[in-house]
Length: 543
Image (tube, rainbow, N blue to C red; front, side, top):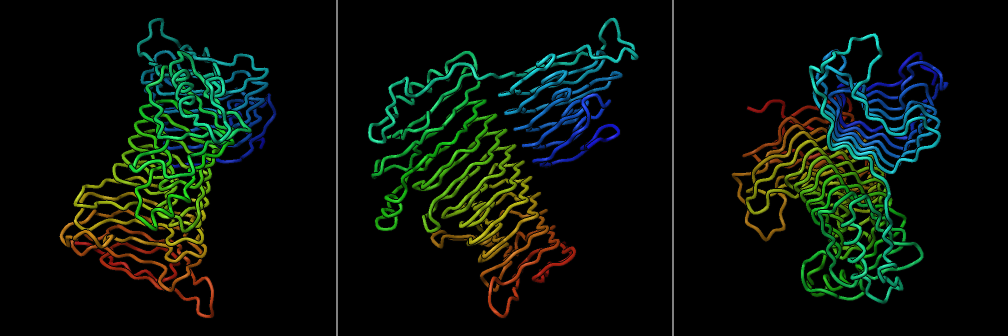
C-alpha cells in the first residue's frame, strides 16, 4: 500500500502466478500503478484487488501469454496495454486475455494506448465478461497517446498495428430448455443440446449456451459439438449433465467432444457425471472397451473453470492440438481404484495454464503426452491418484517431444507416485526444460520417479534407443513416502538422463520407528543443491 510511485513490477520474468493480493493507494495519488509487466511471458494474475491512483495493471512491450481474471479494480485508471512506442521504439505485445473482472469509479476501463512514431504490434487480445461501473471512458484504443511534452510527427513515421482485438459481451442466451431439453435424467436431451449449440455457434455476435440449474440432463449417446463458430461462445453449465447408466457403446469413442472451436469459455456450478461404475465392473470382468468422457480437439483460446467432472468410464478430460488454454478451479473425482480414470491428458498442445483445481481419481491427475510445450500447472490438490506425470512417451518406437513444463505450489497425497517422467525403451526424441518445485508430498508410495524402462510387459523393448531426458529440476520437494525407496531414477545406459538438479528435497517414511528413506539412481548426471534427503547420487559429468 501507499507506494511513492509504481507498486509492483515484473521485468524479464516467466511462469509467474499472482493470486489474491491487494494493492491500495488514494485515488488521487500520482502514478501509483498496481502492477507493471514488461518483457515477460506466461503470466497469470487472478483474484486480486486494486484501489490506486493509476493503472491497476499496465502491460508493456515484450510481454505475451498473460491471463488476468477475477479482478476488482477501482478507483484506478483501469487495465491497460501500454503506453507503447514512445520515442519511436519498437513494441511487441500479444496473447493477452482479460476476463471476469469488475472495474469501477475509474478514469478508463480497458485500454490500449500507443504513441505516434512507434512501431511493432499489439495482437491477439481479448477483453471479455467485464463489469463496468461509474467509469469515465469504459473502452479505449488510442494510437495518439502523448504527454504533449514529446513532439508528435505530423506524418507518422512508424505504424503501430492493432489487430485481433476482441471486446466480448455476453450477447444472446441460448437456453437448452428452449430447444426442447427436458432435464429429467430419463429422456435423452442430446439432440436438444445439438440444436442449441448450433444456434449459439452460428450467432454473429458473442453468445451463451445455458444449461440451467435444478435439472439433470441426460446425454444418451456420443455427442460432438463442432466449430468453427462465428463468434466467441460461453458455455454456462449450472445444471447437471449425466451419461446413461448402462453399457451404451462397444467402441472406444468419446461421450462429449468439442472440435475446431476457438474462443470457447466453459464454466458453471454444474456436474458432469460419466456413470463410470458400470464400466469399471465390465472392464474388470470382461475387459470391455470403454468410452472417454470429454475431449477438446483443435480448440484455441479455450477456458474451463469451476465445473465438476465425476466418474468417467475412463479418462475424464483431454486436450489434443489445442493452444492458449486455461483450466481453473475445476474438480475431477472418481474412486481411487477406478481403472485408467486419468484427470487430464494433454497432447500436441501448447501454452497451457492449469491452476487451482482438485483431482481425486484412479490414475494420473495430469498426464502430459508428446507434442506438448509451455505448460504451467500450479496450486493443485491431487490425491488419491497416480500423481502428475509426463508420459508415457516413446511407445512402439515413436518420437516424443515435450518441453517447458512447470509444476509448482501443489499438494499430492495418498498416491502411487508423486511427480513422474515415464518413457519406453525403443522410443526417441526428448523431454527437456522441466521444473517441479514447491510440491508437498503426503503418504505417496514413490514421490519422485524418472523411468526410461516403462513397460506393460507385452511389448519387446530395445536397449539401444530411448527418449532423452535433460534439464529437469526437482526443487523444494518435501513430505512423506509409504515405501522405503522414495526416489527412483532409472535411466538408460545408451541415452542417460543429463543435467538433473535436486535442490532442498526432504522426504521421510510416513510412519514407523525407522523413517529413513532411500534413492536408487541409474545412469543419471547432474547435481544436488542444499539438503537432499534421501541422498541422491548423481554422476557429475557426462562425456
